[in-house]
Image (cartoon, rainbow over all chains, first blue to last red; front, side):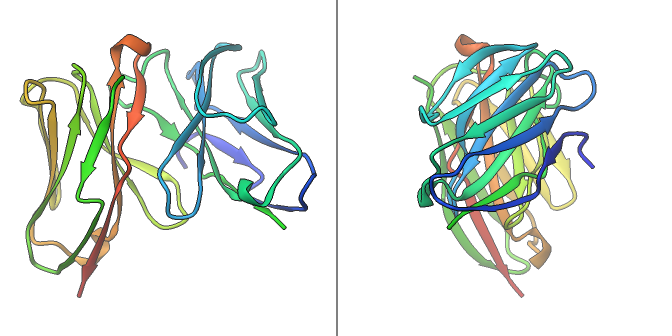
Length: 114
Length: 112
Protein backbone atom coordinates (compact mmCIF):
# COMPACT_ATOMS: atom_id res chain seq x y z
CA UNK A 1 0.00 0.00 0.00
CA UNK A 2 1.60 3.24 -1.20
CA UNK A 3 -0.57 5.42 1.01
CA UNK A 4 -2.30 7.04 -1.99
CA UNK A 5 -5.86 5.76 -2.30
CA UNK A 6 -7.81 5.88 -5.51
CA UNK A 7 -11.42 4.89 -5.98
CA UNK A 8 -13.00 3.25 -7.79
CA UNK A 9 -10.49 0.75 -9.16
CA UNK A 10 -12.60 -0.03 -12.19
CA UNK A 11 -15.31 1.93 -13.94
CA UNK A 12 -17.33 1.02 -17.02
CA UNK A 13 -19.61 3.64 -18.46
CA UNK A 14 -21.26 4.67 -21.70
CA UNK A 15 -20.28 7.40 -24.10
CA UNK A 16 -21.66 10.79 -23.19
CA UNK A 17 -21.74 10.05 -19.49
CA UNK A 18 -19.94 11.77 -16.64
CA UNK A 19 -17.80 10.12 -13.97
CA UNK A 20 -15.86 11.22 -10.92
CA UNK A 21 -12.57 9.70 -9.85
CA UNK A 22 -11.39 10.18 -6.31
CA UNK A 23 -7.93 10.35 -4.78
CA UNK A 24 -6.71 10.61 -1.19
CA UNK A 25 -3.05 11.60 -1.02
CA UNK A 26 -0.42 10.11 1.23
CA UNK A 27 -0.55 11.49 4.75
CA UNK A 28 1.36 14.76 4.90
CA UNK A 29 1.51 15.32 1.14
CA UNK A 30 0.05 18.60 -0.06
CA UNK A 31 0.33 18.13 -3.82
CA UNK A 32 -1.88 15.92 -5.93
CA UNK A 33 -1.21 15.14 -9.58
CA UNK A 34 -3.49 13.47 -12.10
CA UNK A 35 -2.18 11.44 -15.02
CA UNK A 36 -3.80 9.60 -17.89
CA UNK A 37 -2.23 6.49 -19.38
CA UNK A 38 -3.79 4.96 -22.46
CA UNK A 39 -3.03 1.39 -23.46
CA UNK A 40 0.70 0.86 -23.88
CA UNK A 41 1.29 4.58 -23.75
CA UNK A 42 3.32 6.86 -21.55
CA UNK A 43 2.05 9.11 -18.83
CA UNK A 44 0.12 12.20 -19.84
CA UNK A 45 0.11 14.85 -17.13
CA UNK A 46 -3.34 16.35 -16.65
CA UNK A 47 -3.29 18.69 -13.68
CA UNK A 48 -1.69 19.43 -10.31
CA UNK A 49 -3.21 20.83 -7.14
CA UNK A 50 -1.28 22.10 -4.17
CA UNK A 51 -3.02 22.66 -0.85
CA UNK A 52 -6.35 23.27 -2.52
CA UNK A 53 -5.21 25.45 -5.39
CA UNK A 54 -4.48 24.60 -8.99
CA UNK A 55 -0.70 24.71 -9.49
CA UNK A 56 -0.08 23.42 -12.99
CA UNK A 57 -2.03 22.28 -15.99
CA UNK A 58 -1.01 19.80 -18.62
CA UNK A 59 -2.88 18.32 -21.54
CA UNK A 60 -6.25 18.33 -19.85
CA UNK A 61 -9.32 18.45 -22.05
CA UNK A 62 -11.99 21.05 -21.43
CA UNK A 63 -14.41 18.19 -20.73
CA UNK A 64 -12.25 17.27 -17.73
CA UNK A 65 -12.00 19.19 -14.49
CA UNK A 66 -10.54 18.62 -11.07
CA UNK A 67 -10.47 20.06 -7.60
CA UNK A 68 -8.75 19.54 -4.29
CA UNK A 69 -10.77 19.84 -1.12
CA UNK A 70 -9.77 21.23 2.30
CA UNK A 71 -9.04 17.73 3.56
CA UNK A 72 -6.63 17.46 0.57
CA UNK A 73 -8.45 14.70 -1.24
CA UNK A 74 -8.95 15.37 -4.92
CA UNK A 75 -11.54 14.53 -7.53
CA UNK A 76 -11.17 14.33 -11.29
CA UNK A 77 -14.40 14.84 -13.20
CA UNK A 78 -14.68 13.52 -16.73
CA UNK A 79 -17.74 14.50 -18.74
CA UNK A 80 -19.20 13.87 -22.18
CA UNK A 81 -17.11 10.74 -22.26
CA UNK A 82 -15.78 9.40 -25.53
CA UNK A 83 -14.39 5.99 -26.42
CA UNK A 84 -10.91 7.52 -26.54
CA UNK A 85 -11.13 8.47 -22.88
CA UNK A 86 -10.75 4.82 -21.95
CA UNK A 87 -7.50 4.65 -20.01
CA UNK A 88 -5.84 4.19 -16.66
CA UNK A 89 -6.06 7.32 -14.57
CA UNK A 90 -3.43 7.70 -11.89
CA UNK A 91 -3.26 10.02 -8.98
CA UNK A 92 0.09 10.78 -7.37
CA UNK A 93 1.03 12.87 -4.39
CA UNK A 94 4.13 14.58 -3.03
CA UNK A 95 5.25 17.17 -0.56
CA UNK A 96 5.41 20.68 -1.98
CA UNK A 97 8.26 19.65 -4.22
CA UNK A 98 9.30 16.11 -5.10
CA UNK A 99 12.67 15.79 -3.48
CA UNK A 100 13.86 12.72 -1.71
CA UNK A 101 11.18 10.39 -2.92
CA UNK A 102 9.51 11.96 -5.93
CA UNK A 103 5.86 11.17 -6.39
CA UNK A 104 3.92 8.37 -4.76
CA UNK A 105 1.36 6.83 -7.06
CA UNK A 106 -1.99 5.32 -6.32
CA UNK A 107 -3.10 2.05 -7.86
CA UNK A 108 -5.12 3.82 -10.53
CA UNK A 109 -8.66 3.79 -11.85
CA UNK A 110 -9.25 1.84 -15.02
CA UNK A 111 -11.95 3.61 -17.01
CA UNK A 112 -13.64 1.82 -19.87
CA UNK A 113 -16.04 3.81 -22.04
CA UNK A 114 -18.35 1.66 -24.16
CA UNK B 1 11.20 23.41 -22.67
CA UNK B 2 12.49 20.38 -20.84
CA UNK B 3 12.46 17.19 -22.83
CA UNK B 4 13.27 13.76 -21.51
CA UNK B 5 14.25 11.04 -23.94
CA UNK B 6 14.63 7.41 -23.09
CA UNK B 7 16.23 4.82 -25.26
CA UNK B 8 15.65 2.23 -26.22
CA UNK B 9 11.86 2.35 -26.05
CA UNK B 10 11.66 -1.40 -26.38
CA UNK B 11 14.16 -4.01 -25.34
CA UNK B 12 13.94 -7.76 -25.57
CA UNK B 13 16.77 -9.66 -24.00
CA UNK B 14 17.75 -13.05 -22.70
CA UNK B 15 18.14 -13.91 -19.07
CA UNK B 16 21.66 -13.56 -17.80
CA UNK B 17 22.60 -10.69 -20.10
CA UNK B 18 23.55 -7.15 -19.12
CA UNK B 19 21.99 -4.07 -20.60
CA UNK B 20 21.61 -0.34 -20.06
CA UNK B 21 18.68 2.00 -20.48
CA UNK B 22 19.53 5.64 -21.15
CA UNK B 23 17.69 8.75 -20.06
CA UNK B 24 18.75 12.06 -21.61
CA UNK B 25 17.26 15.40 -20.66
CA UNK B 26 17.55 18.80 -22.24
CA UNK B 27 17.71 21.33 -19.40
CA UNK B 28 19.71 21.58 -16.20
CA UNK B 29 18.34 19.52 -13.36
CA UNK B 30 19.83 17.78 -10.38
CA UNK B 31 16.91 15.52 -9.53
CA UNK B 32 16.09 12.39 -11.44
CA UNK B 33 13.81 9.50 -10.62
CA UNK B 34 13.39 5.98 -11.95
CA UNK B 35 10.11 4.11 -11.74
CA UNK B 36 8.98 0.64 -12.65
CA UNK B 37 5.53 -0.28 -13.96
CA UNK B 38 4.19 -3.79 -14.41
CA UNK B 39 1.42 -4.19 -17.02
CA UNK B 40 -1.82 -2.66 -15.82
CA UNK B 41 -0.30 -1.77 -12.48
CA UNK B 42 0.82 1.36 -10.70
CA UNK B 43 4.22 2.99 -10.81
CA UNK B 44 6.73 1.95 -8.19
CA UNK B 45 9.63 4.18 -7.24
CA UNK B 46 13.00 2.51 -7.83
CA UNK B 47 15.67 5.16 -7.42
CA UNK B 48 15.98 8.80 -6.52
CA UNK B 49 19.15 10.52 -7.75
CA UNK B 50 19.72 13.95 -6.27
CA UNK B 51 23.25 14.98 -7.18
CA UNK B 52 25.87 14.74 -9.85
CA UNK B 53 27.64 11.41 -9.69
CA UNK B 54 24.93 9.79 -7.62
CA UNK B 55 24.83 6.03 -7.92
CA UNK B 56 22.18 3.80 -6.40
CA UNK B 57 21.95 0.03 -6.53
CA UNK B 58 19.21 -2.39 -5.66
CA UNK B 59 19.71 -6.03 -6.53
CA UNK B 60 20.43 -6.36 -10.25
CA UNK B 61 19.58 -2.73 -10.99
CA UNK B 62 21.97 0.18 -10.73
CA UNK B 63 21.19 3.80 -11.59
CA UNK B 64 23.56 6.70 -12.04
CA UNK B 65 23.31 10.38 -12.78
CA UNK B 66 25.66 12.67 -14.68
CA UNK B 67 24.20 16.16 -14.47
CA UNK B 68 26.90 17.67 -16.66
CA UNK B 69 26.08 15.30 -19.49
CA UNK B 70 22.34 15.47 -18.60
CA UNK B 71 22.27 11.72 -18.63
CA UNK B 72 21.11 8.97 -16.35
CA UNK B 73 21.56 5.28 -16.90
CA UNK B 74 19.75 2.27 -15.52
CA UNK B 75 21.97 -0.76 -15.76
CA UNK B 76 20.64 -4.27 -15.52
CA UNK B 77 23.06 -6.99 -14.52
CA UNK B 78 22.45 -10.66 -15.29
CA UNK B 79 18.79 -10.03 -16.11
CA UNK B 80 16.08 -12.31 -14.78
CA UNK B 81 12.52 -12.73 -16.03
CA UNK B 82 11.07 -10.92 -13.00
CA UNK B 83 12.64 -7.68 -14.16
CA UNK B 84 10.34 -7.60 -17.18
CA UNK B 85 8.42 -4.33 -16.89
CA UNK B 86 8.28 -0.81 -18.27
CA UNK B 87 10.83 1.55 -16.79
CA UNK B 88 10.30 5.30 -16.70
CA UNK B 89 12.71 8.06 -15.86
CA UNK B 90 11.46 11.46 -14.71
CA UNK B 91 13.36 14.71 -14.30
CA UNK B 92 12.44 17.51 -11.92
CA UNK B 93 12.11 20.77 -13.84
CA UNK B 94 13.33 23.55 -11.56
CA UNK B 95 11.78 26.35 -13.60
CA UNK B 96 8.37 24.77 -13.21
CA UNK B 97 8.32 24.32 -9.47
CA UNK B 98 10.04 20.97 -9.80
CA UNK B 99 7.34 19.40 -11.92
CA UNK B 100 8.40 15.95 -13.02
CA UNK B 101 8.83 15.61 -16.76
CA UNK B 102 8.57 11.99 -17.85
CA UNK B 103 10.33 9.93 -20.42
CA UNK B 104 8.23 7.75 -22.72
CA UNK B 105 9.21 4.58 -20.90
CA UNK B 106 11.30 1.57 -21.89
CA UNK B 107 9.42 -1.69 -22.22
CA UNK B 108 11.76 -4.45 -21.14
CA UNK B 109 11.03 -8.08 -21.92
CA UNK B 110 13.38 -10.67 -20.51
CA UNK B 111 13.06 -14.11 -21.99
CA UNK B 112 13.84 -17.18 -19.92
